[in-house]
Amino acid sequence: MANEFFAEAGSDIAIRITPGVGGIFQVFADGEKIYDKNGEENGVFPNLPRVKELRAIIREKLNAPVA
Image (cartoon, rainbow, N blue to C red; front, side, top):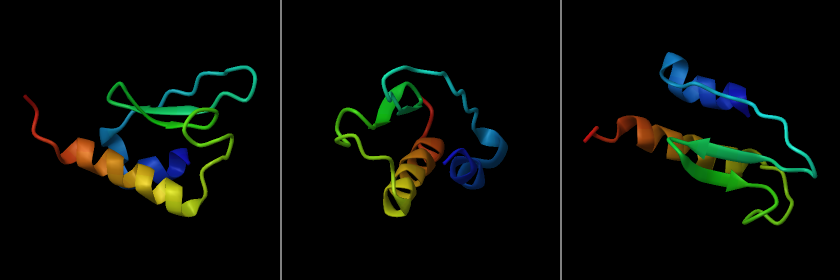
């Protein structure tokens, strides 16, 4: 999935991977949680359509005007 995010944003994105326990897998973009495997996703890893949705969220954040 990190490769998909780099493909979307190139050098405009930084990715930090932090180990967790108990199957925790979360993705944050600009401090906002956009994916939580054990939360809203009901324990399911992202499939290709979901990864595309996450890429779109990242694209929107990158294109949003800075206040």
